[in-house]
Image (tube, rainbow, N blue to C red; front, side, top):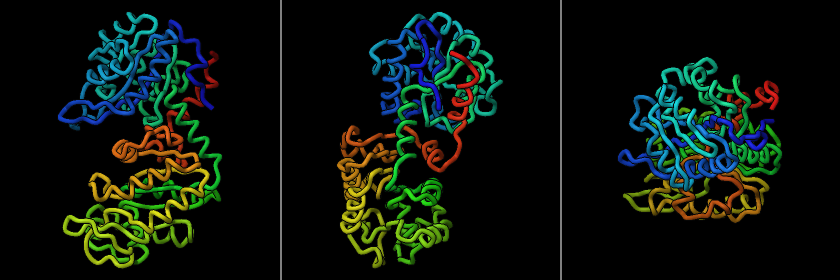
Length: 397
């Protein structure tokens, strides 16, 4: 159990709020995205409650191309909020502290990239960030599952010093995950190429009696087809190049241990000389597997419509290419029409939803998290959520 921000009397109080607005860049320009929109709505509720809001966030990692200050992010948040978002190119210094002390009720301040602090990722409770800023605040709000798996100063450090709770974005994610924890007859749909992440979730849930089926697509399906003994044409070189081939034995053992639970494609869309050629999965000789095909889709749709809960992470193929987005678009459309509650996650999944113009309201919940969502579903403890639970008994509000 964690507290929600609405459990606090926030008017006139300084709130440190950890959000995740880590965003894609195009030629150095930060792009508007669902994370910024979602956090703007959450910030608006705090603003309307009369709080003095100090936003903590990161962008990229030191040494990487997308490691930049957050000035552009402030402007995008301001555009969504419709009210000013003040920004200082400082995190813990005199400029930052002065800006915090000058905040009025309902005002919003975004500090610079917290990863510009040397000990953001190496220390937690006694970091420079916490030492400098905790004395200036009244409450801390963690508002992102997507950073909750990191034992970083801006995620867990304030929780030993300030009463803490979950923001709206995090609370909504937790509620969707709770719904999954209590569900039966769950269908998992895994695509993409992050095999280790998918395997972690699959193993945990296959050990329960809750899984109806696991449907695979993308690079994951190529791995399972190879593990079953099918030829995969030119895609074998892809498995070797990416290191996915080393997981073939594990995939084979999983199918043997849980017979009938993992559905692999019965036919596929091949890329042969740049063109799409559909082919039965057991007759692939040349070309590369870029998509699922018709018989597979019909079987997958039958399972989707007979499920009570659906979790999807990853595309069914190379959806970025027009000829090979067919499987991904049709599976997403089927999930959107299913009567099951659906939880979707992963960056490529969200991008595909936008690409194929499927309204997000047609799904039960579209998660903004990536690695943290996978770790949660794999049964791993997330430091951020553990910290909020521990904090519940530490302070009386």
